[in-house]
Length: 288
Image 1: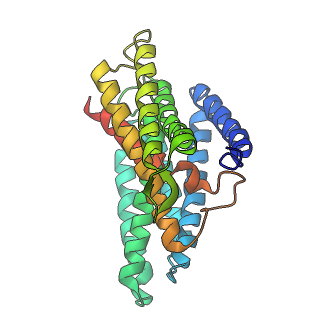
Image 2: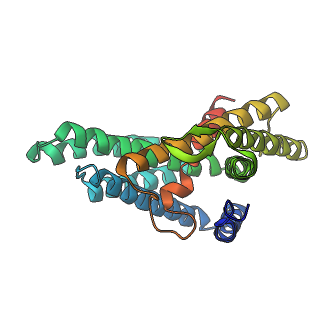
């Protein structure tokens, strides 16, 4: 057991620090000025995540215009900030998307070698990292056409908590009892039992939030029991798919971690599950 949990102390320490920072950030997100600060934080994480992604791409002998992509991605996050102030700014968001599309193409007009692969890789990076991360901002600050503030803190907390407990459930169940490998070629440490442990963790925490919602104004957090169970199931599945998907990229690039954060790896290692779960919660809120 000691061998299995040799990295547990470091993981717990850095995970605790990160979770504490996230809790405080979400809790104080409605304080004046915090919307801008959180937008800057997400833009920073997006930039670092894209930089790590570009390093994996370089390992495959492809060189994408990473500074252009980062610059346009930061502009996109800025446009999302304005959308959270008023949905009337959505035209700005669409304008940035259009500029991004044409600018990446224009960049390659004089760099035709491997243009197809570089274009596909550039657009995938933006789709993989930027859009899911921007949705966290839109969950925390639901867009509105009025001046009335809509508090999305509980939904942001729900997204972070259920996703995190998927990771925790999978980690401990896999380490303690997991034997049969889930996808050994992609991630040797993932086990079938660990997958179900993560799945169970997500459902349990989703149910806990359902109970919390019974005592909270429906304007801030409303979810029926069937919805909580379905969302828990989806997050439990897609959160782990997000982890495996990033492992697939790292395996192809032949790197162990996307970055050098102690006991964590990189920004992509930190948010890989959120990249797959934030769209689920956002779509749920938009459709219900």
